[in-house]
Length: 88
Ligand SMILES: [Zn+2]
Image (cartoon, rainbow, N blue to C red):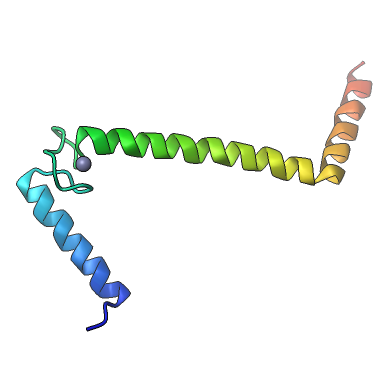
């Protein structure tokens, strides 16, 4: 039997429902979820960390893309210089 994307999605949804009804973390399924949450303490922490890293990576990539686009930087610098001249 081959698993289609739809079957996987349904399986995941059922697993999530089952774990939620048992009051267990829907991520690891091992620890009780925090009150009012669907994740346990360690999974909450893990997700927070993952998010923080993805944000940090995004900032680095943005900076990198800016560096690659030298023309844009020059254009921005010229624009800033212009604005300074006008305001002086
Ligand atoms: Zn967990």
